[in-house]
Length: 145
Ligand SMILES: [Zn+2]
Image 1 (spheres, protein in one colour):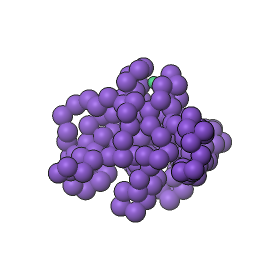
Image 2: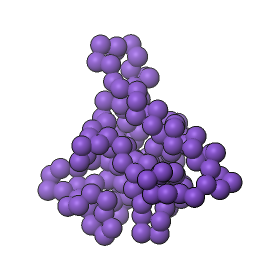
Image 3: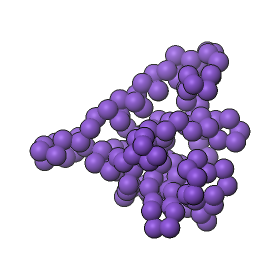
């Protein structure tokens, strides 16, 4: 799995030599989610797309951003302490899903997860969550552009 350390002031990441870079990443992640879809601007379709940062493959669109538990953007910490800024998307056509769904350490109670990778370069982009017919992608904003 790709390991990206992302900041979370609420969790109290201690500043270190990578602090400036982490801060930029955080601001960038937030700026991705600030660009809200404009339903009237069909000619700007390409600008609504979100791409794999590694290979530029189209992954999803801003129109797919949905709130989960009331938030479009979640800061999640895995069992070994890595923090991820993830955005929630109702669909991500550029992803392929790997692995048997599991609820182990799930960040969204009731939802099981599988890995979501870029279908072109196979980079790990996040996770696919499902629960009795409901599903969404939680994608690591640092890995998108
Ligand atoms: Zn890719």
